[in-house]
Image (tube, rainbow, N blue to C red; front, side, top):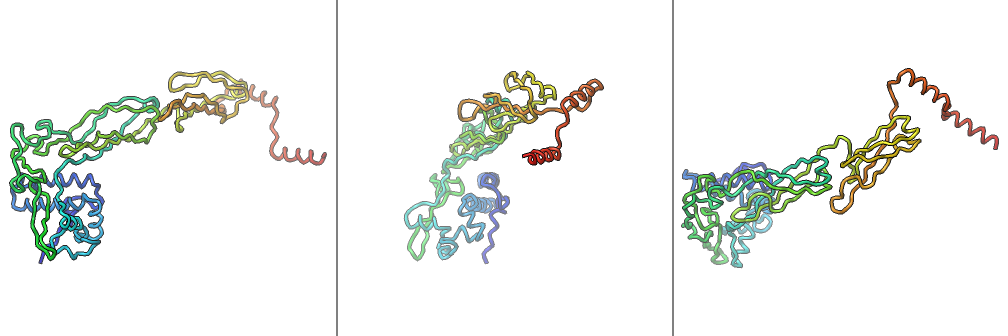
Length: 372
């Protein structure tokens, strides 16, 4: 009786909702652990094959979906779950197509794009409004400082893989009812590179890269807002085997301002005035992001009235010009009055009379209606 295969997620040690990046990292770690050139234990070769098989499925979006739905039979099915071709040594529809039309299923160890990185950047209110340049540290995989990414100790060179004779591929001839077919797969010893590192770099242990921090100068455009995301193309993680870097995504967080609130590209400033200023009018200064500006408060100003200072807001992110500064007035009722202030306000209140109540206004309207 055949031994049941282990769950691919269990083989790689990742949860079923693992991201592609986490699957990739888990594979790298285990592949280095069980690689025949590095591990001489009895079951290392079988473990290495199991890790490769699991990664081949979980790194492919379609095959992973089939596996999640149908288990081990899913990725190996030729036509949506029918297993009629499994006995002929085919692992999926791609193998059947390639066998008939002369293709190759080998995944050569060619260049692969690096993973994307994500990082937060903290800005002051003024930095976000007017733009700035920041130096940030980006932590990720970088070429080994000792072997410069060659994976071998300086002075030594990788040797030709004897398992695949330097081709990076293994060809197996299979007989079936259709005739003779050649199944081509990636060499599991050299991982499709055609060469094996005989003397791995002592610093990176033959990986060709190491984890370190790289300083990056970032230009922040004027007018960027809290929560915005910046994409820096080609500044992500190092690609494999000469592949391009991934992208770096910066999540912008802006510190609140102690005086202003931001509404799009407009700024809002709350101005408190007393009863005398509101009734008689006054001249005052309003702070802006650059320098204070004068503002005339007309007599009779009501609480909640808004005054607009044109062009004193935040610069527009993708065009010229700036937003406005909106000054919201709030008439403050005094809480602590001395005796003289109370006397004067009492005289003022008596001289102004008592406003009619709603009932009084209603009665007055009725009298007017009665008199025609």
